[in-house]
Length: 322
Image 1 (cartoon, rainbow, N blue to C red):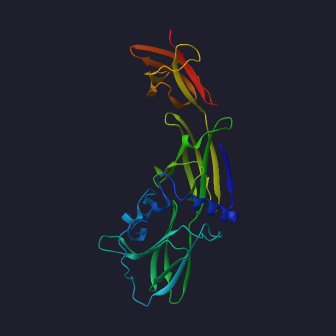
Image 2 (tube, one colour):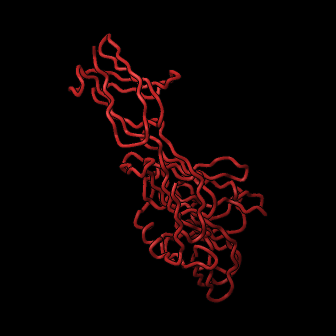
Image 3 (cartoon, rainbow, N blue to C red):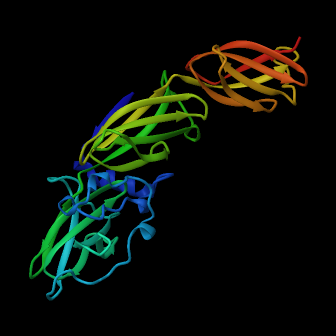
């Protein structure tokens, strides 16, 4: 596995790249998680807020627009930084303003929402919960609005993660064969899915921390795993290496002959476990390194052979009828 970290002093390039990607397969920018309904001091548990795909238009309650405290509304401008001493994030943030007082259902009222950056609100003096979502990264903070203009900053503590995969030996894998799942751990140490079916070279915005990444090469048994650290204001790029190869099968009457139609295929491990099945003359798949038994069924006849998969370029496996 190869990992590189690029500091955020060149953050403009990092942000421009990630914004141009628009979203990921299963958890898009617009599907950033919403904040927990109540802070800990009011009985809530924000650490358990799910980092999963939630449509904010469905999950967010209706905006009440009723200020929680009396007083003339004041201008409030809020910006987000990638880290305490980092740069301002120029765009791509979804902002929400909540009251600090639970309603009858025990939830915090959503008072306003915008996707403009910097965010500009008109709020009466008092305390509010501000939530910012940037891709899969999010942060909440309680802020105080004072009489007069208010300029506030939220620290997102966000970094970037960009993934790729290759076959051991630095053999490229076509992007269409690769996808990634990203997990983190909750307060109880349980694995939580953060992003699913991420494509190569996509940039994820994530809160800083350690993430477990699984790379899937094909759809059978070729995987590679790594634990990666995301740091505030840095873009972590990692390549995961697979010990696997693409293979094709064909049943022929002579070496190098044409594939015989109406053939069904089964690939088994040496322990007898079925790994792959297909009913076509010339199937193709990806298998992890190892030894296998290949069976070809043609009508009532069954042909078989053992073969070995080693990391490398695609190869063809023939079974010759006798």
